Image (cartoon, rainbow, N blue to C red):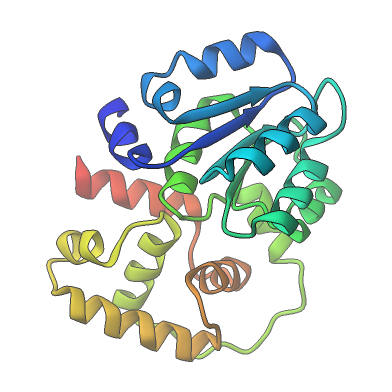
Length: 223
């Protein structure tokens, strides 16, 4: 697991903003994380200044901070550098918080400490970590007509959610990268979207895929 995380974080930079110093300490003790870390803070303003200075690849932030909030920091970060991936750690999965996190552009929302490492891996890879609590909120939105996806297209889409590259998807599904690209093109056309994140969010909202099933299927493939 740590070797995989080290490979994922290789070449990336991270800023962490967590409520307690002991949480920061534990986070920094993860060797691959420590190598990628360019700044750590416990308040919103401190972390925002680190984001402005370093323009990291990844922001890991808890909703509760010593000063300010994680959601506010995510919103400010997204406005400043939209390409930064953001993972929000929260201990409350109420609908209001989830809707605010989605509106502010969180790439991942983690509610369980035991799921932090999978969430970190998915978001760092460029995927979307939206567990069932988030899916339930998305599925309350008015449905939009969607052209049915094939079983293979759903398999590709599930792996897009996990942040896998076309090359990695082709290896897992035993097809060529060109075939994967063709599937992705058809998925975009059917869902009427123009990028992976929109495709994943729309598919979760429609109940076509789920994070839990995607993670389970990927673990079965990778062993």
